Image 1 (tube, one colour):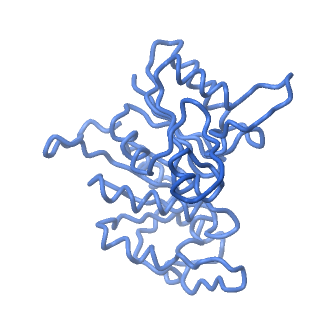
Image 2: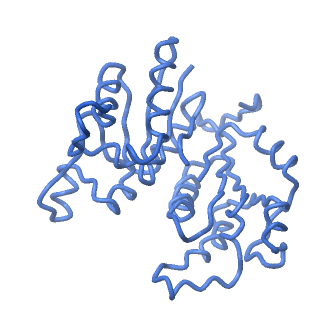
Length: 130
Length: 130
């Protein structure tokens, strides 16, 4: 089965992104496909490469990058939600005249249409939020 | 998943329901949820909106937001008709629990019981909750 996932909460404060990750891992282990994870609301904060969690804790951002690279998952950060919250890729930083960018490997910034498209193209869209 | 998916001009039409559960202000969920609804209109899908719990406050007439320095986005719900989004379902118990009735709402809606809302949700291909 083809799954798409939406993550609506940021890392560490809320379990939603952990649950989404565990779901993705379990689905892949069972032979399913996870095509896209769409990060919305505070969920966009899962895509900053500047997090530095304590060494004895899980690294939520790196974990997403790794599972995406290994399984060809499209990690999409909503551009409108990202801009409000200070998440920028190189192009956006240049376009907005900002002096830095912070997107983690494997993530890309795109529009809300990617969420609707994921709903159309997948067999199930699973939402993890509050 | 419903079995009666339509295919038109090579595109799939799915039943999308956006479930609004949060008050319009206090958190960003309602505002960003509405942004997804507007984008979905561009995909020619069968879109409906459900309002449950504090989500019913999103549709209340006469919202004044100057005091909290936020934009009053409630007029956008009136504009949905222009996007061919006309299926607005409101949970009766949520209204009554908050001392509201259909007359307090700024758009035409279909008020229904929790059981009817559940049936409506069961018919959807994609349910996204905010």
